[in-house]
Length: 316
Image 1 (cartoon, rainbow, N blue to C red):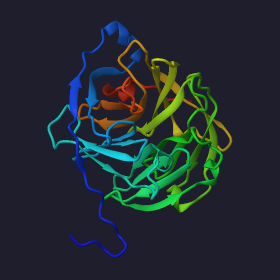
Image 2: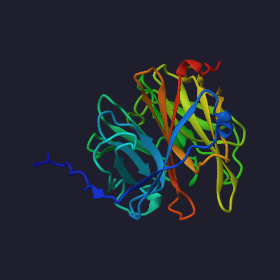
Image 3: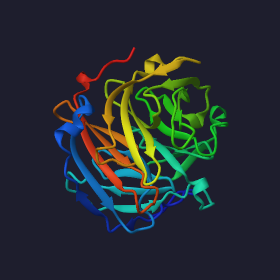
């Protein structure tokens, strides 16, 4: 294959000996606080490859394998375990000539289905990088509004809205207790192209930090949140909330409404990635993936929930 001048071929895909184990669903009484959401499946993903684990972003890819991206800049392509398809593989994104985690710490990702381009948010550098459909980098920016977002509290969530705007929220500072009122930016277009963003703060369930966002077809944004409730061994609780991005105002507070509680009695871990898949029956499949921090005492879990969007509230 011949590549145009100045372009680089994609990095090779490395095979993974991925083991997928379906976990038993918890008793109904333990899922009562999921509200309108139905917990359908949970899988435990395992591999001894150094390129596996640490996933902070998850993207559904129509008609092909999905993508999960780790906080060390490694990308996993895989077929969701509820369907048949090609086996998994991993590759290094090579976002920087420096191989350290500090220069490749992807915490969020989004995609334009029309162009196939990707955008990833890097913590520490507080940077947004754009990649083409072959995952070759073609742009990067360090927006001034993210300049003071800290070394370990950067763009934890990033979503390209259907109207072409981009929404990102800073991770909550503090390891054990999160708070509300954290800053966010709403860019008028591709952040790489510049443009003054709308600055706001987000207010949701108290003591929970935003870890990912995804837009549902009617325009509302589903927000995944997490709280570390016990440090050793780590135990987490999560929340799902919903917000209407049309209500975001310069200098204002964007209030999101809690719609589901993922309590620590459920088989959860450090849930950081979320993607949404519309279904033929009108329901939405909501997929969640956990970041195991490359630690033996944590797990990479993949959840599939479903919900009828008509049963979710419209925040005001």
